Amino acid sequence: SGAHSVYEDMRNVAQNDERAQFDLEDRYLDHETESHHELSFVSRFQDIETRFDPEARERIEQSAGFTEDSTGSVDSEGSEDPQTSEKLGDT
Image 1 (cartoon, one colour):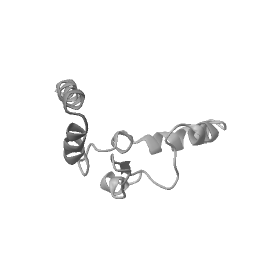
Image 2 (cartoon, helix red, strand yellow):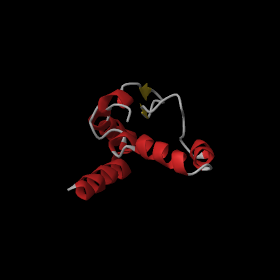
Image 3 (tube, helix red, strand yellow):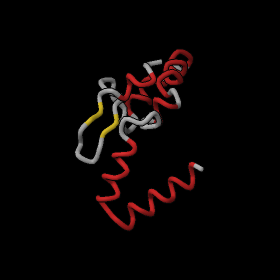
Image 4 (tube, one colour):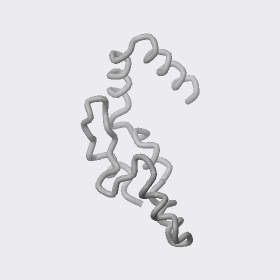
């Protein structure tokens, strides 16, 4: 199950530090589930929200992690995967 995988990954990170982080990134980057925002269509729901709530755009833009420039994932090196938004398509 997903909870089991998360538990095992976090236990590995707690025990093996950055080695486990790099292992996790190797399995996570370029995977269909890499971006939970893309997977759950966050941008689609934000578009709907901004149509009906005049203050939504400001709240979204002020939230942590917001950027108009990119939806890619950032790895532990600070590098961004520019293809993340292309995998599921911008909706």
